[in-house]
Amino acid sequence: GNLNSILLLEIPLEEKIDLMIDGYMNMLMRNSSLPSFVINELNKDPDKFINKHVNGEFKNVFETFIKSVNKEIEEGKIRAIDPRQLFMNIQALVIFPFIGRTMVQVIIGIDKAEFQKLMQERRELIKAFVKQALKP
Image 1 (tube, rainbow, N blue to C red):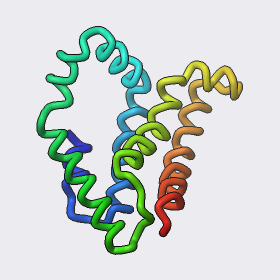
Image 2 (cartoon, rainbow, N blue to C red):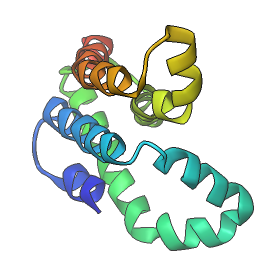
Image 3 (cartoon, helix red, strand yellow):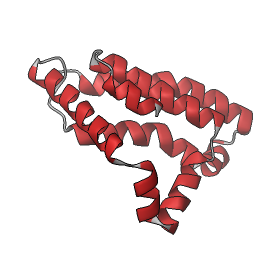
């Protein structure tokens, strides 16, 4: 899908991360119930879900991501970080508010429209946060 094509691009890691975050955020802004659906499907039949959606192609693409992170570490462009942790950090920062959307809205005291606005602001905050974390 879209993430695969982004991860395969021959562009600097920072640009790749921006595109990843935009891709995830765009998808989640259009369909905020997607993460809950995915979790339910995973819990129902993990093997079926993984075989259908997390096939060999994605594993190859993920290897490409790891290589591009390690290359930038070697070149001194970013600090030494485990690429797997970086990948999970990006996922967590982007996806969690959508998984816990109802809880987030209640705790913060906002409606659905305000939640959407907050997520638009969050998109840029996550990009800045991740870049700051990668500085050598």
